[in-house]
Image (cartoon, rainbow, N blue to C red; front, side):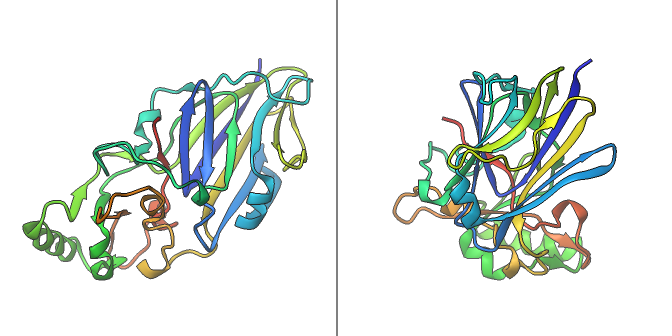
Length: 270
């Protein structure tokens, strides 16, 4: 019976699934962000590493693969788990009506996933697409649903494009794969040839958390550095608006789902 590996990706990441290779790009232009890597097995922490943006650029690209004894990735075999389209499409009709071009300098590190199935993990609802011109008027915490509702109603009476409800989409992304006898999971910098952690060998199942988010928990909208980074990383036409993702926190308490602010996983279809 193969051992299972579950990998959860969370934070300011851009996903591309093409030719059975999943490329996960990290928005290294987002200041104040770090990649937190954690591996657990049987509720015991085996790996805990933190990488800043400059370190990630020095490691780029990083290959995440099952080593069958060759020391290098086999041909990619990543499959859609059936929910990959639940990862919000930054190039789709929820944001812009035409295909966008990414500014490559914004994403100077990528993780290449070679095996497994990948799709939505936790889903997030009640999110809004908001125009940049509204940013100064939005509050991170709203006193009540009524307070937020009145504000949204007033803005939408001016223009329905300023605030738009988004469909249910992935707050985080999950990949699952299997390890058979003699195999190991490795995460290796193609640039340096070094492993980011010791290979995970068979004999137990693993949970891997890869999170790219703010260094500190944001306590206000001004602290939420990921608010519109993805949209600002797109090549836009002259005067074309920048959009961000916004989920209001009601009643002054930080919801556990939104605790990392507005840094959300998105996808970019070719």
